[in-house]
Image (cartoon, rainbow, N blue to C red; front, side, top):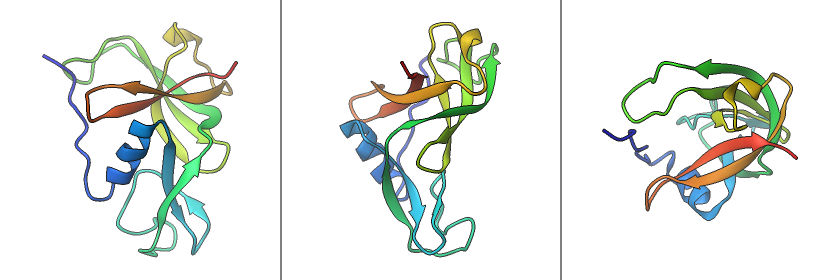
Length: 131
């Protein structure tokens, strides 16, 4: 059985389209200057509905990490490092970090986004150590 494929929604479709182009974008609220993830109908800080996607350089720091040894579902290869990434340009993402050895991923590690084709329609953002 294969890993579940993300299903873009009206809110997330611009994120997936950008990822397919090799660009990282995250929701940005101009009303309160917040970058956030996951996309929501309104800004989680000020509830403004007029946020938009903004480009991210895709570089950041591992804020928190866990090594997953038990697959969350069919199709996941274990072990893998799952981390909260503090992006340099604001916002945080939960993502896989591929450092070769999942145990090598550490809090404070500098990382950059690395896009990987998952299906013909979906490209996943992973993070790798910044070199």
